[in-house]
Amino acid sequence: MPEGGAGIQAAATAAGGFYTGRTMSTSRQAPTHLRSQALQQRAERYFPGGVNSPVRAFRAVGGAPPFVERAEGAWLTDADGNRYIDYFGSWGPMILGHAFAPVVEAIERAARNSASFGASTAAEADLAERVTACYPAIEKLRFVSSGTEATMSAIRLARAATGRKIVVKFEGCYHGHADGLLVKAGSGVATLGIPGSAGVPEEIAQLTLALPYNDLAAVEAAFAAHPGAIAAVILEPVVGNAGCIVPAPGYLEGLRAVTAREGALLIVDEVMTGFRVALGGACERYGLDPDLVTLGKIVGGGLPVGVFGGKHRYMDLLAPLGPVYQAGTLSGNPLAMAAGLATIGYLQEHRDEVYTRLEVSAKAVAEGVAAEAQQAGVALTLNRVGAMWTWFFTPGPVGNYDEATTSDTAAFGCFHRAMLDRGVWLPPSQFEAAFLSTAHGEAEVQATIAAAREAFAAVKAG
Ligand code: KE4
Image 1 (tube, rainbow, N blue to C red):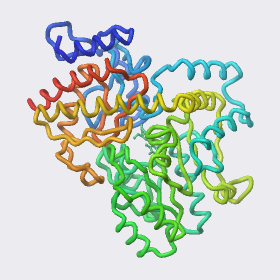
Image 2 (tube, rainbow, N blue to C red):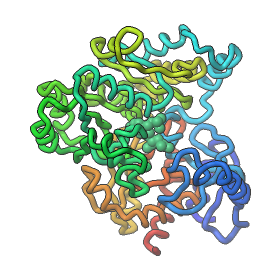
Image 3 (cartoon, rainbow, N blue to C red):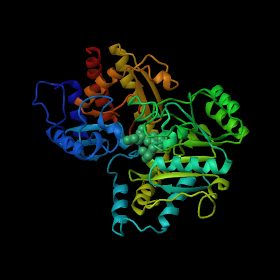
Image 4 (cartoon, rainbow, N blue to C red):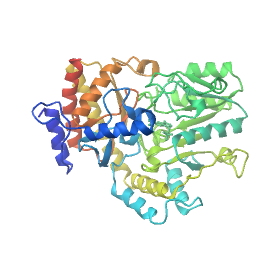
């Protein structure tokens, strides 16, 4: 059993599980993935690429995606009984680990009262109280069912509030798949190498300016080129969808100043960073006071919840008070509210312990793996903010999307497959961020570093 596999086995045992994980070792019966392969074949009968979201197809890293059957804490178990340490966490929501008892129990209790009413409930304001306590910039909000709905609605609101049409976004930032935002988006689309998306009319794409991230001069030039025409600037305050890219000192403050001066709204998309890089997200971490904020992922505790919110003067433009229409059948769904309440409530009540643990574990695993890359002579740049990070397979630095694209995606694919074979499931794309949870402990960190030592050898061997 290679050290990595042994490490994972020990970690799995420590986590109270068993380990039948795949390893590169020849000294044991090759683990099977026959059931995942059969499930993939069936899935391809119903879903394009066999998936309900493109990145899950593993096209960017190669190999066959395992089908997950259950998960607990830091661990996923696939349909063949193989276990993996989870570093994508449902793309961010599972900050307290999988099947976290208070969240499970809250959903179970809510489900007994019916799954949905389509009418107002106290739970919506209960969760809104917690969200606004974490986000002073959010004076009023609306719950929706995805991050895409949140950003789409925030942009409509900004256009109505300003009477302007153009929206500025940044290359490498992804804000969901609303037509006007699939212009050099960074998630999925970038991974697939498609600069925009088929099906988005040119007339719509022309209302979006995609500028380089971390470049204030480009923003100034855009406002100079379109005086009085830019409704909003939307960005990921810490980019996650090009891989993790950190805002340069003064950049976020600069965006706030130029949008305030020019009468455009600043929309901070914290769907990924919200409650992750701090309890109050990037707004807290960087002292941001945006006009509108979007949230998702963690706020729903793994159930479908998005949020858009901000200053009264904008939010009160929404129907039924004002002329901006926005709606949703399952907005404020009682089960989703229950999961969100249990999650955000726990984060608030255990704030110091949670964010200290996340920082310690993320620093240890991110830097530990980077040290193994250096030892192996593999060029790697680590960008990290709290418990989200990316190992870019490039000498770096990586301060924008163009620099991110200098990464050796073939080497990343080899690393991803080698880590998966050793029971470590990384996000299946160089242009995504990795996440961990409060359930990731020393055993998982050390097992991951041990697996990486062997995986980098595989990368070097080509
Ligand atoms: P959803 O519509 O997928 O709930 O949220 C869209 C969205 C908006 N804003 C940011 C900053 C986001 O990261 C996302 C979605 N993130 C991707 C992960 N990179 C979701 C994973 C997927 O597309 O399958």
